[in-house]
Image (tube, rainbow, N blue to C red; front, side, top):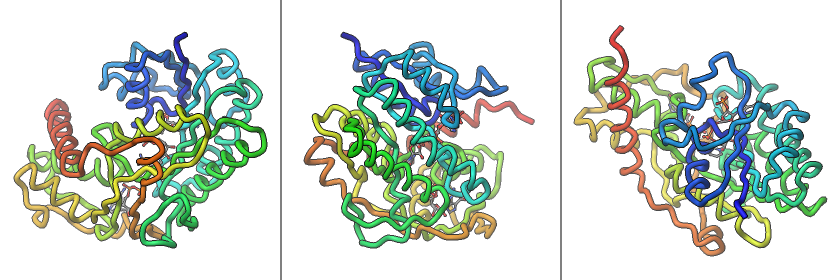
Length: 328
Ligand code: NDP
Ligand code: GDP
């Protein structure tokens, strides 16, 4: 029997890579897509990976329980991956209520749709290392207490605990993946790695002279999205649902990540980076460093792409993309 997977957030970075992975494993893949006046462009990531015409997209929104329930009842999925969110930390201070409605209450909507419409389905919640925020331990694992530092992280914390609660209350096969930052050529343009690799491409091709950044002393544990979606799938293949940290175990400053990107294009970062306080955040997460030993042991999961290779892949992809942009 062909397995059926339903993904919210299928048009995002992780949704695209997860759809690719599930298709390669023979799944029938369904995705929730929210209505937009830009129909035709919102599947650009799926097209980039060459899988857009292999997935079935259904109209729905995380804020609209009735749409989710109808979709779950129609699709009857074996596995549900809840990836949709207002996912950008900096925006969450400017749109805190929307962030709560989608990134927090949206999870409850998806869990309710699952409980009512497909109680036997396995459920994955996209939790985040941002929940550790002001870190309570130098290396963060499933046992580390949370201390969220942004409206986004507060909302993700609700999503995490409501998932645990539905598992414990209703016996849902619901797992929460506490994923550290993961990037790719399909990362949203406003996140720092992609902003840097796009900036490097523009400088290299003579379309820009400078790159304006905020706190480049911040440290993150960055991995490749393609590696991380594999961990999501592995979680749902386990007999028992559980929570797992997914991370590389290496942390790097934004400054050093920039050095890798600029060096790959033969450029000097000091000649182009301008520190602009408009990109400072009201409360910062200074450092994240994950301990994924539980995922390594229980899931047999290992990250395969080191940061240098990831950043070089992103710079190369952005150079190709910027080259294709029409001159203005
Ligand atoms: P993206 O921002 O690339 O994708 C977010 C997705 O959510 C998009 O498909 C977007 O649709 C969709 N979405 C947003 N609002 C709604 C809504 N109201 N109804 C339905 N869909 C909606 O995120 P990523 O792929 O990078 O991340 C996937 C998930 O993992 C997110 O929940 C994120 O918070 C979480 N996460 C990500 C990490 C990372 O480093 N990437 C780390 C830890 C957690 P549209 O295309 O229409 O905007
Ligand atoms: P986050 O970890 O989910 O917030 O991912 P981001 O990629 O948005 O940010 C990672 C870190 O880079 C944070 O500590 C930011 O403060 C820092 N940073 C420094 N300059 C910038 C910038 O110009 N844009 C973004 N997005 N982050 C920046």
